Image (tube, rainbow, N blue to C red; front, side, top):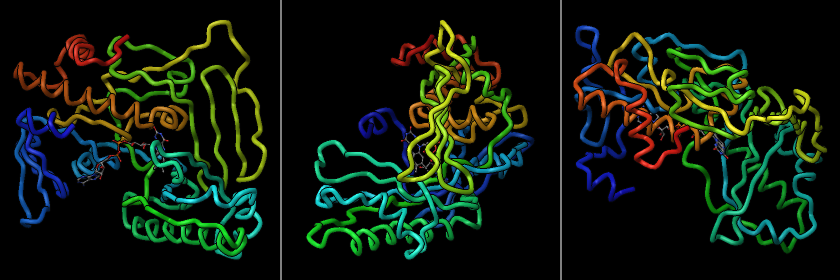
Length: 334
Ligand SMILES: Cc1cc2nc3c(=O)[nH]c(=O)nc-3n(C[C@H](O)[C@H](O)[C@H](O)COP(=O)(O)OP(=O)(O)OC[C@H]3O[C@@H](n4cnc5c(N)ncnc54)[C@H](O)[C@@H]3O)c2cc1C
């Protein structure tokens, strides 16, 4: 990736924060940045907002919406030595003793990290009732870290005395799952995702299930394209299996995100990418994952390059040309 950036004349600005837009005659002409040198500006012909929280689009006052409830953010941790706990069921112990350590009932998951045999990525925390895109971010950051600390303390108190367990890493920032979203030229719907609709201007394919972390309490709901639904109510509690629809002969295996999602009609030279996705609650909960958002980012870059090369507004860039360029770059285009 580094050689790709450096070898293609791209000038990276690491450790640099986008701060504000500059709009002249209805067109976005530059962005203000904050970096080690102080304040600066970067001019451009095309801009992509890929900030997750839609910082640029919101500062430009593009129409936005926030679902009634937001999926809660999580502080991830890497923990070494959980194997040394032996048969001690630490998830059950959190369930039994969490209150003593200030932990609300919750649910979490984790897994091994390739080539780090004794280290697990753990995703055991949630900060409820919190919008991480604004002034509540600091509270969330502190609360998420405190939850990790509480889990470590709890396991040390109730786990085997000879366990050899260490917190080796905390995520640099708390991870936001869902914040404000921008109204685009198309809103992806539950029907589009769960019934696997195809679009002529599709720029991304996704097969990830609907994955809703419950907003104000423990648990998670999964909905699969084959009609199955699984709800995990709380850690240590058996999952509840049901169906959101009866089986059909031809189950869809994937859904698509159309190019129209990248576009809005207020600022002609701004493209949207990532989890500011215009989608209803259910569609968002499937589409928001990395493999899908990566594809929207790539499509946004390709669309901007085509528009610049042809000297046309991004809205006029031919969807077929974008899909062709993506396919030539190795993307699966159906
Ligand atoms: C705890 C957690 C676990 C998850 N687990 C999974 C999983 O297992 N599998 C999966 O596929 N997905 C998972 N997801 C979802 C997925 O990670 C995100 O939805 C996805 O990464 C969003 O992509 P994005 O590009 O829109 O935003 P991000 O990946 O958040 O990228 C936005 C980038 O913009 C930067 N940025 C933001 N504001 C500014 C600014 N003003 N100036 C400069 N830079 C800025 C940020 O630092 C960040 O690097 C998880 C999410 C969370 C929070």
